[in-house]
Length: 314
Image 1 (cartoon, rainbow, N blue to C red):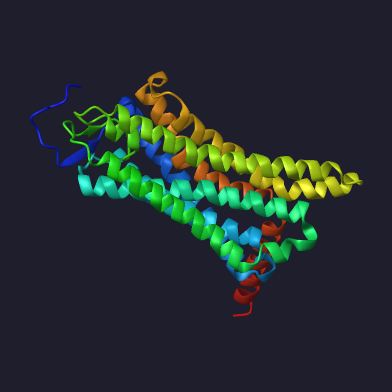
Image 2 (image 1 turned 180 degrees about the vertical axis):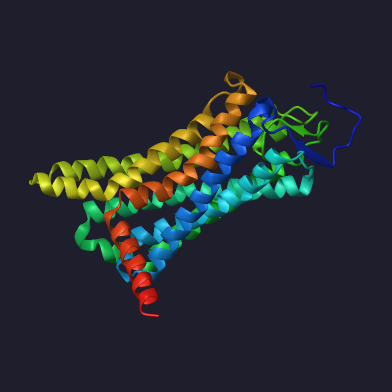
């Protein structure tokens, strides 16, 4: 598609899933169901953790923060995507696009570093159990969460400033939301330097936390293998299994999406990769932590039991 060099662009239109025009209704139903499941699952996790005092520990504090962040993350992208699937794609202003991109970047990076904080929490719990409550006190937990959010905000400001300083000559975004690379492709200026800067930033915010998690788990596995009893090793690893599952999928999807050379992907492939981390990955968190975590399941059953009892007593 040729760029209109003499046109000043004031708004964008999403091309969305135009390649799947015949299946738009099916996609809408599937994505809508997944969206409801994601919202419901994350809200349940946050609610159960807040009302059950047995879950008022650093591990579940980080989990509630991650669930809250994932909920906001889906709210930034999915509702507009669903709206565009069932109707004609509505234009979005430059300011609206910048706002969506800002919150998307902030929350995505926040999620990466929250997973890192959860990895550190598991490292302290298993490798330094006697000092766990001293090291992971409320101030430290709050500082880790604030640090994750601050890094996300800082990187988002840098990238938004970089992208929206460019002149745009085309208004059709070959995507279903304002992601960095599809928007930069609409510029009529040379974006090579911006591409390099964004690749470096993406590498840092994905690779650094991923490496920290890997280091944590090397120490964790080393400590678990030193446990004498088989039952003890199973119990220790069970406390990390849910987090490790989420980490592998989250960082795996993020790495494929932002560290793989863009020339290797078609537009449909880019959208498929994007769907994994905007639609499917946020659902993974509540599914894994409710189906694999005994404490969360027990707390959920207890909460439901109390509600049923209160209802029967009316």
